[in-house]
Each structure stands twice: as C-alpha cells, then as structure tokens.
Image (cartoon, rainbow, N blue to C red; front, side, top):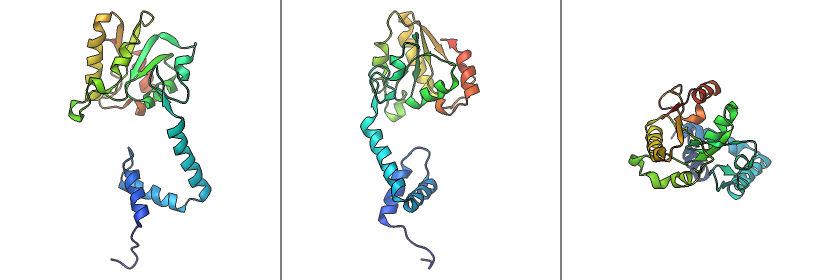
Length: 202
C-alpha cells in the first residue's frame, strides 16, 4: 500500500455502500457525499438526520390517488379548483411534480407506483390498477395515460387502455413529443406541455 494511501474506515465504507444504493448515485458520487458528510458540522448532520426521520414519520400515501402527502386526502384531491372529470395516470409521485410545473393540466391524478414488467416480476396486481378502476365513475370523462415512454410504460398504457375500453370513458395517451425511453420526471417543461396538448385518443 502506498504511504499516501489512507484506507477508509468501516463506518465510511458502510455509508458509501448505502449511498450507492440510491438511484443516480454511483460509487464515485457516493464517496464524495460520504467525505462531505464527514467534514460537515454537527448542525448540518442534525438537520439532515431530522429531515430523513421526518420523511419517514410524516409522509403517507393519499388514500385516493396514492400520491405522497402529509395529509389524507392530499391537497390535489381535496381541492375544489381541480377538474374532476379528468384523471392523469402516472407511474411515480415525482411525475406529478413535473406535470404540475408546466401549469398545463388542472385535473386529478392517480399514481400506479410502478409499471408492468414481467422480467422484474411486476404484474398487474403489484401496482395500483384496481384502485384506479374503482375511481372511474360517471363524473370521469377522460383518463390520460402518462406512463413513461419506455417498454414497461408502453406495455402498461396498452393494458390500461384495453382494460378501460368497455367502460366508454375517453382514454388518451401523451403525444409522441416525448422520445422513447424518456422518464416523465426528466422531461423539460416545453416537451411535456406539447405532449399534453397533442395527446391522442387510444
């Protein structure tokens, strides 16, 4: 071992391993974050710890749309300013943030918490499809399929469109302005706005 090489402690290695499990964080990024936290003062560490604890203790799923919230139902489901005739189906809660940022949509949402993926063992019973179907009453005139434009998202959209076809409700899919493989949360506002404006019935 080189004289200038200092091995990481067991505690640092454990933190790096845990950080590396987070999406979008590779080994190098995990290492940088770990050593940043090592240099942080006690107040920074305390605030981070409290934020993580609060996340687990205060955050729940809305019993209506299954978005993350601190009150049930969530603010969107409670609002009398939303268009209750439209429901937009998304895969994850962060997709709602991306759509809301565009100000193009004023309806309700439903979060599936995943997409159909046989290769990963995720079937129709593993995501919130049954709960979605229970929401389709006479007040709903349009369901917008805003799943991701990858293989799993397209497969899920196709399944949902076929499932809802006998109900007579209008089912639309976001326009093809979103490149294949795009995750909704990473789409820019302009692309997402055009995708909503150009949505087509399926």
